Image: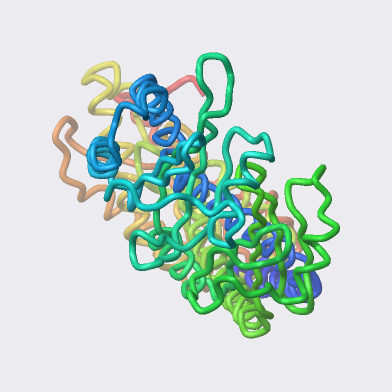
Length: 476
């Protein structure tokens, strides 16, 4: 089968496959998109949760260090200090703690006096019934070891601050106060803003009542979360890693409970119709490019294979010593003539080198090889363009002439003359026996019979050579 036909067939098959795969891609793209969104949501949740955890983990650890023997001793000996001494004493300690670890504020509340200390010293005495200080009573009654509390920092221009409240106990396990550090959420809010802008998301942290505690937009702090999220917070399934819901073409929401802080991380992504269409187009373009590359590759590969096959075929049909066609190629051409042609269109010439055995015995095989090579070169030069020349035995050759042969005797004379004129290094002269059978003279014979006629004519010519007693007859 010709290469062009094969390429066309392969191309059609590839086009059909392309159509089927494209149709399947379009059908399944929404499912793939949903899976991608689910994975995207999971990655966002994990990244944000990690950021939140990192934001507070160190502050919890540092807050716990305040509850040490130094502070407990101070609380135990509070009556030994004046207000000014206590203010300076605790203020220096909290200021150093704040400076050393880079927090925005540090605080201490003594239960016996309800005094509130910051890095600025003694700030006030808590009003346990007042709205600003109710957090203290609530935390004391909760029995919790630690909690987060988002509140205004009255010591620092009422900026929104996240406090890590740590319960303080004496050596007997008696409640003696609350300590901790606080920091603003600028870093976390910045991370959230970047994610929101980069991925077109809405991200907030809320308490259990749906009140926003952290947001990339400061104006939303303290407001209620969108009603879309409220049912997921109210009915949160704590056995799941998170709540996830997909809406329309790529829109989704995720709610993740963060137990360490008793907050809910809420992420909302809008519909992504354009993104889906872009994904489909990219998929189609990529498939089309792959198709074109595949067709080109197949064409080149098949052309290369055809060339390699031709080279291999030529090598398998070429005689290694002489470079002309070998006996295998001769047999194939005979079979081809039997199948598609008639002997009327061809002539067969059979040639045998005379006295090769004698030359080999007397002058060596290099001399004999020279005679074989010169014979092959001569007959190829004479008839290579009018047919094919073959080496069919050690010193036996054949020519299948595929053009009209006007004069048999002239053919014999020409071959004998040209071989006799060869310049030789090891021998004096090259002599050959020649037999010719012209197809148009034997219209009723087969190609094998025509070959036999040429062979007999060659043997008759060889007999004339051996009538000369100087020539040693080779055992055949």
